[in-house]
Amino acid sequence: RPPRSTLFPYTTLFRSMVHSQTTQQVGATTVYIDTLATNSSIPWEITLEGEDYLWVTERAGLVSRIDLLTGVKDTVLDIRNEVHTVGESGLLGMALHPNFPVIAEVFLVYTYGPEDSQGYFKERLVKYTYNGTDLAPQDTLIDSILAYANHNGSRLHFLQDHTLLMSTGECSQAMLAQDSASLSGKYLRVNTDGTIPADNPYPGSYIYTMGHRNSQGICTLPNGKILVTEHGPTTDDELQVLEPGKNYGWPLIHGFCDEAFENTPCATGLYQEPIHAWTPIIAVNDLVYYDNPAFPEWDQRLLMTTLNGQRLVAMKLNSTTTALEDEDQYFQGQFGRLRDIAIGPNLELYVATNSGTNPILRITPPNSLGVKELQAKVSMIVPNPADSYIQLSPADPAEQVSILDMNGKTVLELKQVEAGEHIDITRLASGTYSVEVKYVDVDRVLRSRFMK
Image (cartoon, rainbow, N blue to C red):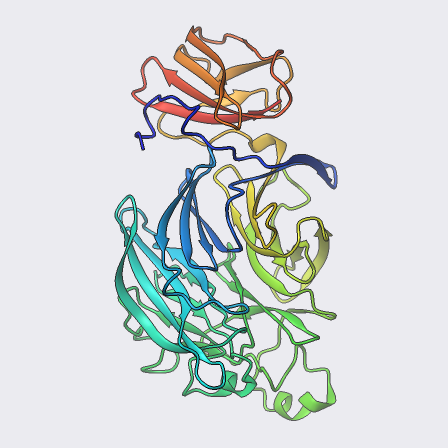
């Protein structure tokens, strides 16, 4: 594959990244929705690498790296022969080292066999090294965690001190969540070399928190607090503040302390209640904190994906992070089960779904269709969306400008574009286009997108 800084023929290399393209209203804001990489099957985790790539795990055992501009998907790991996939198990959580790619480490969780006579098998946390093309296994950090067809947790999240959190499910054995001798039904905290952090709340143990049924969502707020989501049984999906050493009560407490069967455990004061609970359940999954004043409906809100609910939930927290002030729901039933969510370099959002048609959605506010700064000079397109013309910003002379459709076909190419020149696009059909700009005084190609 040629370097990203080199112009090359696009027709044979680019693949289509748009399967469908729509506009929808989110309150007063019009967003653009298209599909990135239609050839992904049951993506479980999506995470950004800088401003150019989206990494994806597929439950069958594939890890891929997708170019955000072109949609080209490169498989960097194939462990389908090693992963045991049944029910909700398989290749699940993933995290890139916070200093990636300087420290080119990738952390993965997957389940493996064989099954025992009761249908149980194992789960492990493994560290890989990315060599620029493939993932090479480096170390198994935690092994032989109990696994089952469901309730395997497996969301990964780095803390500010670069220790790694991993959620584990209770594998449908509810009381394992209360068993300090078991790693099931917990959040675990581990150093990147696999050792136990010296300040873990349970000395000599990976256990960070306990009493979890099956947590598959986690994010850090601007105030440093950690929020997690947890699947309830038929009631009480939960949103929780994660604090070291706390016990979140499963199966002794379901949601808040508001049922007769919970009176005795709640009276002990040993268990942490959530800040919000959903009944009936909507199968809460991953979440992010979104900060974008140009998108007021979602600005400074938690955005959460759901499975049974098949919706994206936008939530406003109160100032003390003890309750929700409001909650709005979007896209209900439109795209199937929504598994994961990630924020892109221009505040666009990527959503992993179980849909075979739209496995990875991109939701783009109209003010963020360009690509962020790649070096000292910024290449943006104005206006965006455009109607009859586009202009480069900054308005400096360009040696070459190439406009490509989303099938990788060059539809317009200009040489020696003058500073501030209007580029006529009246002959282009409506759609999303990528732009390659070679500036006279910049030794690389800068990329951007625009909508017509």
